[in-house]
Image (cartoon, rainbow, N blue to C red; front, side):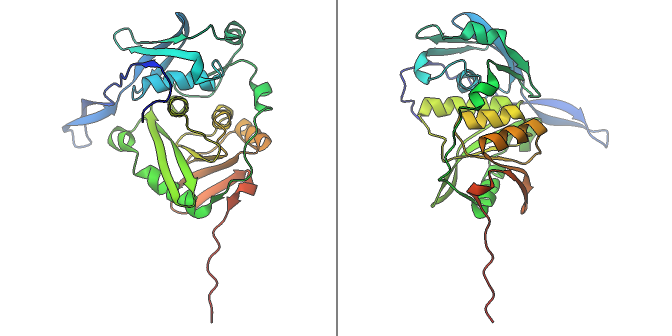
Length: 283
């Protein structure tokens, strides 16, 4: 998609898999694809912010989404350029004006259970209280199953090499479910940040969308989905106590253990979910 914002942007995706030799159970040497993993240090106006370990699929979107989801930037319009240089393993973000409150937020860091980065900045819970999600949208059971079927067809790196998490954003309309973005990375937080960044670049509204992740639903994952104003959060994995508490507080419709077949567990936001009613048999 073309970006509607005037942004100086590199397009520096890395190879996503690499081939190494492994010995199988029969003692045979077999060429085996493995997932890439690369350090990428993020700088904002020449100040070092964090080093992420990433697959390298969408590093520019990842950097933008990181600023968005960590609440370090409030709008894509604050960003002038995103330049990735794999020779120095760095991404340099230049802003149009110094980001407000950056110094204070850098002093307040919370180590989280996330893989791939695992840090949040600033007054987290204060911003949670201000998040309002739409209540006039509905997710049907049929749409949920359609989403899970569509996601399985997109998991290219996982099927080839394993060792990655996948996240997707899907539309949810009367015409059906459509995957808008699908990103795989070594950390589930990287994948959600890359999607958040691309949404900003493309001007995509999340208020009627479904977000899917292969990873567990921790407090940070719930907050990130809510910050994107996404009302539906689905995972094939489980959830944590704090993730459940925050999802319940925000009112997000959260579904876990949706790994395939017809099984799923609806945890919070039940008012937006509609179970499919089986046709009544007529004698």
